Every structure is written in C-alpha cells, then in structure tokens.
Image (tube, rainbow, N blue to C red; front, side, top):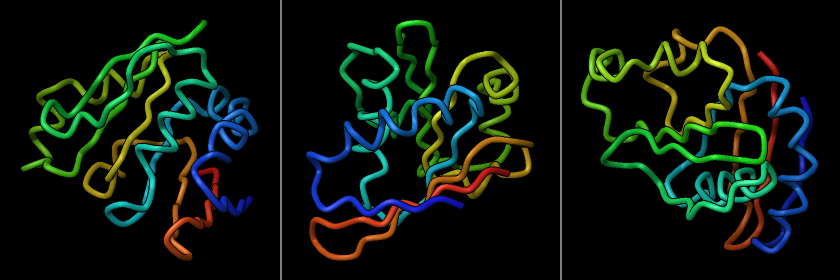
Length: 138
C-alpha cells in the first residue's frame, strides 16, 4: 500500500504523473470514495498524464466514456447508477477489462468479482480541500 496526502486540487496533476507507471502496468483501476471525494477529478488528472486531450466528464448515464491518450485507449466507467449486474455484462464489460486498454472504474463495488487484478485507489476526505489517497495492488 502507498498513501499520498493531497492538500488541494492543484496537486492532482503531479500525483497523476507519479501514478502513471503503476496505472499503465496494472490497466484496471478501481476508484473508491464517497460522493464528492474527488474520484472524477483524479481521473481527469490521470487521463491528462496519459496524454489525453479529451474533455473528461463522468459517464454517469452512459456508464462508459472512451478517451485516447498518447499510446493508450482509456475507458472511464461510472457505475453509480448501475441498476443490475446484468446491465454491466450487457455493455460488454468483461471485454473492456480484458483488453489492452486502461480501465478507470468509479463505484466498482458491484462488479469487483469481474476484475481479477489491478489497483484499488481509495480517496478519503480529510477536510474541504485535503484528501488522503491510498493505493493497493490486487
């Protein structure tokens, strides 16, 4: 486990660059944290660190957005509104995570059994601006 303290949003790009090699190596990244903890903000920083110039937004209603990085295809999942386990199977989730693409997954609690390896990133609010970001390999 590795932990980082981020004192404000301006530190996210630097942290994302530090995490870049881990993310490229592991491909499947699960993001945990309460609503408003900063999951999407960190994902925006990670996409930029991977060379994406796309506008990054949470795919809350579409479940998945696709972005292009320098040398990487990036899939960003937001499973908050997932109605059933079958719904994620219907969009071909297993093919996404078995591909060579990087999969960044918010609210992964309902699909953890489908992801065999990767990183778990837990974001804990310390105060209004400060976050503790913990990273676990699984």
